Structure formats: C-alpha cells, structure tokens
Length: 246
Ligand code: IPE
Ligand code: IPE
Ligand code: MG
Image (cartoon, rainbow, N blue to C red; front, side, top):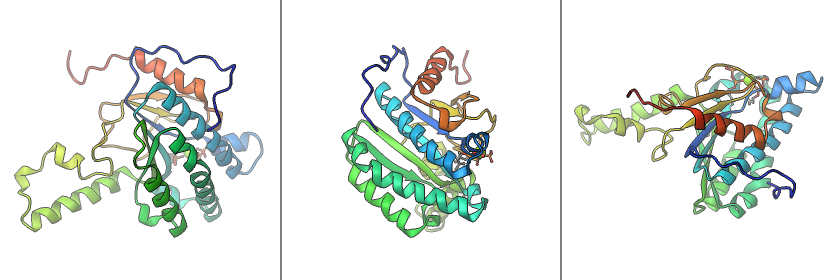
C-alpha cells in the first residue's frame, strides 16, 4: 500500500460505514482477454486492486474486510493458472506483510488451508502471527474457500461433540453453528461487493450473508479502485435494512 496521493479526493462523509465488507473479486481473466494478455496478467493487475480496496476500507474505518481470492472450485482451473495464482499469492503475502502492520491490519486466512501448497501455508502462518495483534482492521482472505464445505466441516465438529457426550443435540442452535464455522467471532458481512457483473454468490459465505446487502458492479476487478469502493459504500448508505421487520 502506497501512501495516499496528495491530490486524491478526501474521504466522503458516509453516514454509516459497514463494519464488515466482503468482496468477490471477479473479472481478472476477462480484463486480460480484452487486452489479449494471458489470464495471469489479469490476476497480477488484480493485486493492485486488492491493495486499493484494503486501503479504502481502512480509510473508512471498516473493521472486517473479507476477500474471496480462491474458491474450492478454482482448483479445477488449468494447472498453470493455479500455480501462477499460488505464486502471486506468495509474492503478495511477503510484499505486504510489513504494510499490513504499519496500517494496524491483522490477516486471517479462511478456507481449506490444508489444500494449499506447503510454502503458501507457511507464509500465511508467518503473516498471521506477525499481524495478530493489529487491531484497526481484520483482513480475511478466503483461500480454497467453499461455503458448503465450511458447513460440512462445522457439522462434523458438532457431531463429534455430540458423539463424545459434550453436547446434546437440543443444544445446537444458530450461535453454535456460527461458532463452528471459519468465521467464528466475526460479525456477518453488511455489504457484499461482486465485480464483473455476475449476479451470483459462487459458494461464498452462504451462512453469513443471509441479510447482507448485495452490490454488483460491471467493473472488472483489475479496474476496481478506491472510488469504486467508495461508490459501493455510498450505495450501501441508501439501503434500508429491514431484517424482516417493517
Ligand atoms: C477472479 O477472476 C479471480 C479468481 C477467481 C481467482 P477470474 O479469473 O474468475 O476472471 P474471469 O471471471 O475469468 O474474468
Ligand atoms: C468466484 O469467482 C471465486 C473468486 C472470486 C475467488 P469465479 O470466477 O470462480 O466464479 P464463477 O465460476 O464465475 O461462478
Ligand atoms: Mg470469474
């Protein structure tokens, strides 16, 4: 994260800043295709948008930012693309560890982390440990993440507790289920942004997003910047959240 350019406009005065923003960062491949570049160039450019989104969220005082970086389904992509994505992830984790701390941001990875290559897992652990005490914002990186598999893993944990007699089936409630997920202790997303115009969730946070405000922008992820983040929050400010009430 570079420091804010002197000429960049001031932060707008939003009346409600979402506590938790989640982003489905989509459209890297199309961005590259439009330029006749290999897909990986789109992913590379996308890391700049990651930086911009983190900075914008931090500027606004967002407490939790969750970025969908790699889904369980993404393992089905060509091996070369997967490998390049893992390399890019390693590079970014190393490059930004310092800046995360400078900006008081804690990193937490969520997903089937055991599926990741050993070196990536190590780098995640190092960065998580280094940034653990940072208290201004938590950056959740969804890696090898799948919402259904998250629920499956959670259900298994609870089943084991029942089996061992530590838990009665009647004691299972929404809080207990929420606490068996990767996002235990983290408030549900208030705002979900998806870039590149796709109107779907693609296995992202199914339990956590039941009352999340959705914002889809046609902008491709590599073109997404500070102003786009602000535009999404500005739209969120116009929404009336009713949670089933009147
Ligand atoms: C998002 O961009 C990045 C990942 C899913 C890893 P895509 O790679 O899905 O880009 P499109 O959707 O093909 O344009
Ligand atoms: C969702 O994007 C996953 C991430 C952004 C990491 P995809 O590009 O994989 O989703 P689909 O295939 O269009 O639903
Ligand atoms: Mg996509």
